[in-house]
Length: 186
Image (cartoon, rainbow, N blue to C red; front, side):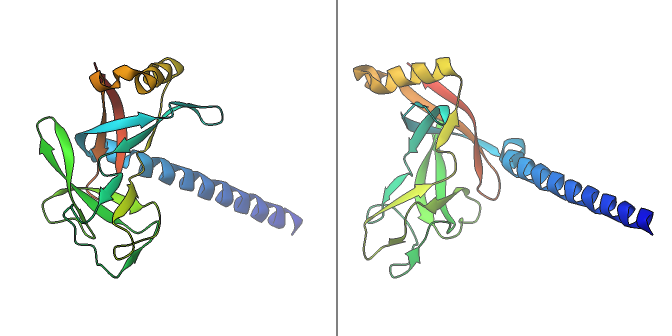
């Protein structure tokens, strides 16, 4: 009887360990899913805060869709509905030259369009505010120390107009995105 109880405890422990491993594997697969099957897009960005004492070497990125003025931007958001952090919205992207630029904001991605899944940063009601602030999960890019220092020089120098910074990201069919590389053009 004692041996059977110990054996059952051992089996339960292994089930618990296996379950935790499956959760970690699932998180990994979810994070890399856009990189494996996503469509590559190039987005212009404005970098900020290249290094942080607590987070390490990273670049905080602002995109053209980070702040949208809805009275001048095509959208189908309901005027009396409040959109909260976590609500899924979709920024429609169209290729113009080498870049993909936002052309509309929708509650559902229009059929046949390339869309980036975004969420409001704050609670938003169209009747109260004219700007909506959005995030897509690609607002931070972690890098090595040398590249972070180089980006810091570009963002703090007065020659920032001559330097263009772009992000190559991959967008999965469900709209989730991951950054594949950061590109600097002088």
